[in-house]
Image 1: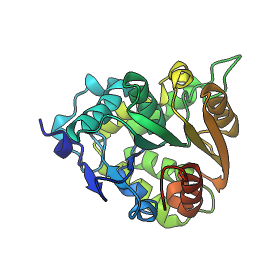
Image 2: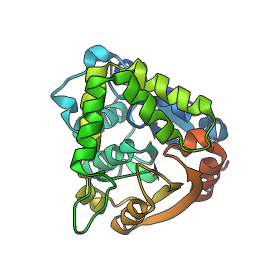
Image 3: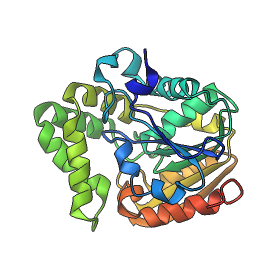
Length: 271
C-alpha cells in the first residue's frame, strides 16, 4: 500500500526547515488551507493530505471497519508520518474534528508532535449533563444524519453556510458545499457519525504537548464554552478567541489565523 498516494500527500519546502502538518475537517480537504500555507512557504516544510474518503484520496482504500471511529483517521496520520520518515518535532495544525484526530495520534505516539494548533476544536458535540455542554442534543445530531439520508444536497446546502459563518463571502459557503457534495454520501455519513457522536474529552485531558487553541467568537458548532473547556483540559495551552463568526476562520479570515500561528510559533519559525 502506498500511503502517500492513498492520502494524496503533498510536501513543499525545505527538508531542513521546521515541519508543519495540516489536517482538514469533516467533509473538507487539504484545499481548505490554501489561504494559510503561502505565509509559511519560506520558513517551513509543509505537509498536506486528505483523509481517506475525502478530497483526492484513494477511495478504494476506504474501510468501513477502520473508519467507524476517529481512531482510524488517527492511524492515517501516524502512517503518513512513518511513510515520510518523521518521528519528532512536527507542528500539527488541525481544524474541527481533525483536532480530536490529531490528539488521538499525539497520545498514541508521544514525542511525535512538538506543538499543536487547534482551530475550532470540540472534544464532544453532544450535551452531557450536568457537566458538559457540547452544543447539541442526541436528537439534533440524529436529525442531521437523517437529513443526509433523505436529502444529501439539501444537507450540504444547509451545513455549508453554518460552517462559513454569517457575513462570510458566499464563495466560501459555495466551496464548502461543493466539497461536501464531491464526497461519497455513504462514506460521508459514516464520517459524520464518527465525528458528531464521538466523546474525546478524556483524550484532550491526556495531551502533553504545547497547544494553541483558536476559538471562533460566534460558532454554532463549537461554542465559546467548548473552547474554554478545551483550554481547561489541556494543561499547556493558550486560548485565543478570533473575532470571527462561523467555523472556518482559515477560509473566511486567514490573516487572523496566520497572525495567531506566527505569534505562537515565533520561537520555532523565522517567518
